[in-house]
Image (cartoon, rainbow, N blue to C red):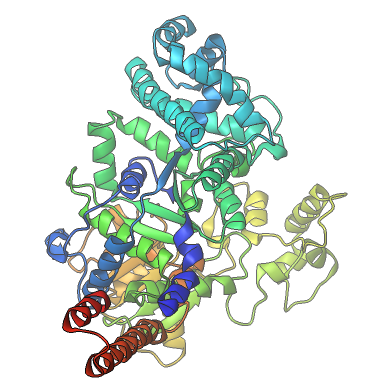
Length: 609
């Protein structure tokens, strides 16, 4: 029918191409999610099979929402094409000589007992020297290095990716047989090397940073994305996994159909998986967390190293993946059905109450004048009715840091903008003049040279002190808004924050009788294990799940009103029914006039159904 075809065309672009980038801490389940997306006909779980810690995962209206997206996902599912970042890193490793590869592995390891000769012998007898891999290695430099080279034949796309994937699977086992955790150490170091110098080099730490190589990995991934799209008219693609925020930005800036999806597992489940399945000890798990959170010192680390914490912060969709039962992926699978259905058909359902409130907190954070980070918070009652909104900023009446400048504090003595301390303290003014000198001759392209008072003050004192921040935290700002404008009880309510509550704000939430704290940042410090882990009325710390930010509007904004969409099908059905009635009336007339016999009438009736 013409109307239903027109409707199909309206959603055509969504149904032809989707690109999902998975992110999350090692052991959270990115690969598990990718494998579910690769399935041809996944069986999505029933509501009764979705329980966590004795409670229904979807309750109330969310259960009805799930029934709708589950049905739509099952009817319109298309398996995803799988691109693994570790496979791309493998491709770079495969271009190295045996000696260079062995040297890189040894120098990437934290274990002093590894020897190049022993590693070299193990690799020589492994998958690296396999005949099929030697043939593949001859192609890789051309694919990775030539800007104009594109894989354009379907068989070649599959063959290259399958070959590299096979290498990764076997090489991973070989590395971990040499030393537990060696695979992760090698591949993390290789990723840093590629981002810093554009290749895997054992000398990358001492070589100068090349800004042109920051996007080396995503550009290589993008070659395969373009190739897949060139040979497959309809292509759903999943990237497993993005752990550098600038690589995520690379795809966000190029594809409107790109969604960054974070997979988050409870700490205890994740650590149990890493220790029992991957055989990591506590020190290795801590090191992985430090590297992935951006804490591990790497030169130019903002651009070069992994920063999963930042990737999660900028994700469009956050999924919860309990790993307390190894073979039970029902909760993760149900959420993938939910959001893939919305990617293909935006506005199919309305957002959950958790998403609705967090979206307001996410929007509120853009009001922040803090130059270090922006955080938003919302306080609700027990029914998710919003009682206050806050963001991290200076007290009402003061000028935010983003609107002040180094030049202003040196030359201006406006007491509404700069404090008495900033205007008159000798040590502070000497330090701020020194800060000004750091930027002398720099072309800021019109940027305002703001400064962080806390950083300058701590530099003057020679020690760190969080008390010197000018801004209120978003959470305490939201709490204070309630008392400032009349006051009301939030006992039994919830606190939503786009970060995670610090120890001070967690204590305030505890004192106010907040029952639930919903957060995005999976690195809550000792808040979870100390501040909120004692007492008789402990607030529940819940990691946010759902769409937020740009993803919220992309997924929940209807392409056209749903009523109008259904009317296209209704009108098409009415038109078809009308045509049948007209034909049947004509047949009856012909029969009455004796122009056709009963057998011909039966034949016509059969044809029109």
